[in-house]
Amino acid sequence: MSADAYPIEIEFPDIGVHALGNTGISYVYTFDSGIDGPHVMINALTHGNEVCGAIVVDALLRAELRPKRGKLTLAFANVKAYASFDPAAPDKSRFVDQDFNRVWTARTLDDLSLDSSELRRARAMRPVIDTVDLLLDLHSMHEKSKPLIVAGPLDKGIELSAKLGTPATVICDEGHPEGRRMRDYEGFGDPSSAKNALLIECGQHWEASAVTVARNVTARFLLLSGVIDESDLPEGWLQPLPAEMLIVRVTEPVVAKSMDFRFADNFTGLEVFDKAGSVIGWSEGEPVKTPYDDCMLVMPSLRQLRPGVTVVRLGRIERRIPLHSKV
Image (cartoon, rainbow, N blue to C red):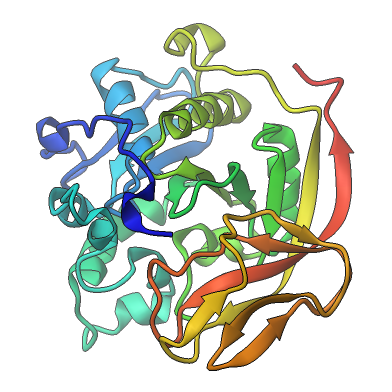
């Protein structure tokens, strides 16, 4: 699917007004209520072309939202990539040197022999992130797929997703071969830690509905954490909950060996193949087949195709959680 297949339906906010920050870190703000409670972080622009999160964080800063309990951090991550956005080549501003969401291990961040624009930004943000209890990382997708939660591999991520209640599909996975995501960093990815994180894929990068999803999940995450009351929210952000949630366990990634990879159809994500052995694509001329019945495709895309990149992940539906009793 070509980059021009999706029109840009949303305006990119001028985030330059937030450059100073109040933490000693540019574009990062922390507000402390002075009352006991969790430290909650809403993060935008892990990828520079994923604008729905930037719209949400910009709106909360302009609205001067402050926590009633605990601490609230509002942050824009890869601002250099965001500044490079070009509507004629919208996918190129995903990152500057390397994917910001593949550098999040202590070993990588501590190794100063490694350098990139993204590593420098991650190291700058790290002192704040190290103090966060609950992280919501707002993302969007290359292809026009229904929104989903990336909950990580642990039960605590599934439990937090169920409490949040939306989006309807919860993806449980180990991450990417290229490197660790922010949502899996240190305590977020430690089953013995009370820290927790969710990554929300709100929709296709340029569609207006992704902003609606980002507003809704942010509002619900803040309410769930207890740092604000419903009366503190901007009007109209909360949306109805789905009837049920699907819990999907990613069993394996499909990683490109070379540039010679193609899908069997214009897949956009969450397609389910009834039978094992269904051909979903070809890698260097060899068929790529589903390994089991009822196999779901998770975020298929060739927009960042290169050797070593995950082009799709394969998932098994583990269970369904009814949400009829939730409001």
